[in-house]
Length: 612
Ligand SMILES: *[C@@H]1O[C@H](CO)[C@@H](O)[C@H](O)[C@H]1NC(C)=O
Ligand SMILES: *[C@@H]1O[C@H](CO)[C@@H](O)[C@H](O)[C@H]1NC(C)=O
Ligand SMILES: *[C@@H]1O[C@H](CO)[C@@H](O)[C@H](O)[C@H]1NC(C)=O
Ligand SMILES: *[C@@H]1O[C@H](CO)[C@@H](O)[C@H](O)[C@H]1NC(C)=O
Ligand SMILES: *[C@@H]1O[C@H](CO)[C@@H](O)[C@H](O)[C@H]1NC(C)=O
Ligand SMILES: *[C@@H]1O[C@H](CO)[C@@H](O)[C@H](O)[C@H]1NC(C)=O
Ligand SMILES: *[C@@H]1O[C@H](CO)[C@@H](O)[C@H](O)[C@H]1NC(C)=O
Ligand SMILES: [Zn+2]
Ligand SMILES: [Zn+2]
Image (cartoon, rainbow, N blue to C red):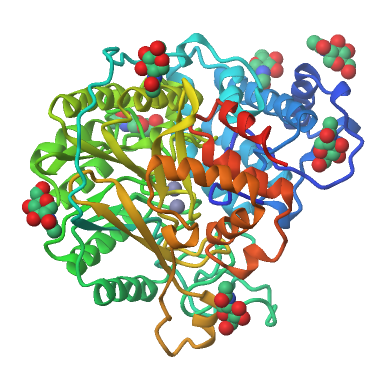
């Protein structure tokens, strides 16, 4: 199971991609010093010694494996990647601190990237061109940054190295006992729509090249090398690494409107921009963002939409700078300004939210008495947000703000929904941030009726357990899946039935279409259908914490339930389901469901003891 499919690994300084090659390389002959010297020798004199060739051969990526989930390495591989990460990073840090010119660094980084066949030459150079100014700013202005810190974060799940003290920080969470208050279910229902991960590609070309060498395909101008029999892009989208054409987005929104007539709220959990990550620009992003929010506003009219930032909205991808960085070519201010203005002008948010959006892309608001929506910009915790190396301590003061606002909500007896693009328990969310987030949930779980995430593109959910009682679920996170089929998925959205007073989710409908079928009948609009109701599919009385705890118990006992989960996870897309999911693969789902902090495997380990 390739669960981290949505994350294309983007490091320029360090390039680690799992190789299938049988290589002579072994852990013993590799240490930081030797590898570092090999790299210097090659960069200076162009000499490739046998050891250098071995390293390259080990790392070199068969193009087909580029999208491999390298975060699941075994310990011996992880050790080798760690040594190489550190050597390469140490080398680039030394180069810069040796006053090497930007042009020279750019050239060497480009050579490393293409030598390792990490991406095509165009993609390598594009990524380096747009990321390098920010990386150099960070290296120049944060002299204490070390290769141990950088690799310790990028390879945080491989325990590559211990981090400096500044990466270990904590926020103040009120330590009074939780003030539990009674909330009655009224029997009345709200309808909430979640749309997420649109990834609109303005360059999408039906019958374009669906089998390209870049991170995303089906785009105008991607050569086909004269191969005519190759896969060509479907009209409504494509299972290969392709995002959505405009007409598919129009169709989805029209369908949603005619099918469901109305909603009480719409949650949009981020990612508007396509995966053309090597050629984004502020201007292009602004155009796509405006276009998407305009059609969303036109579709839903007076229905309030609560949107958040995805990691793709920024330029370059993933980078959210601290608010005190004012230089236009480095800061994120343009994006914060743009979004705040669009959201306020649409009438979705009050002007008062602008302060916190400009500070760090987050806000909270109360749409009606007794109910509060807290919207986070969790992209700051994404390990590929280079600004983490610069200023890792509670970026933007967001988590402290979250804790403070939950305390206010508790005092006011308000129920909260939290929206966050990156799942805070994800292995790609920096450990400290993830740990502190969980600390907040532990204290305020009784106030939070539900959390909503995006980013993974998979249809899944996630549970927070009571740290004092591994049999008690204290919070539930729903992931909206994605409108984009990227990659090997069907497009989907979700409709939540929510209690009008307790704001607890009572059932979820997942709607989707079969991309194969849609493209076979491309003259007709796609046939959207209700894929399943959560309550029915898993045979539950309700979606309470208790019921979900029991569901996990049943999943451990009956693999047939996990098989259903597996198919839903990939939204029934044939290419993702062609390999069988065996016991080891099914087991992964349990861990993914119960892991709520990126550095904490205890829940998973507890439960796996019961797994046969
Ligand atoms: C690194 O390996 C080389 C040879 O493989 C060895 O001579 C050297 O002492 C090692 N250095 C360290 C720090 O282990
Ligand atoms: C780690 O994985 C590699 C390739 O997948 C394999 O060759 C190697 O034997 C594994 N090592 C261990 C210790 O499992
Ligand atoms: C830095 O400069 C010194 C002196 O020019 C040189 O010996 C050394 O190799 C340089 N380091 C790197 C990483 O290029
Ligand atoms: C902004 O940052 C860029 C990249 O570091 C730099 O080239 C430029 O001179 C800076 N502009 C100002 C006004 O400081
Ligand atoms: C866990 O136990 C500690 C110590 O008794 C208590 O302060 C905390 O509130 C408990 N956490 C939860 C989520 O019940
Ligand atoms: C839901 O609750 C709000 C007040 O919070 C009320 O105005 C509304 O009428 C209720 N909706 C239904 C369907 O009962
Ligand atoms: C999707 O449609 C194709 C073509 O009509 C069909 O072969 C396939 O079984 C369908 N997949 C599902 C999950 O229904
Ligand atoms: Zn996405
Ligand atoms: Zn994302």
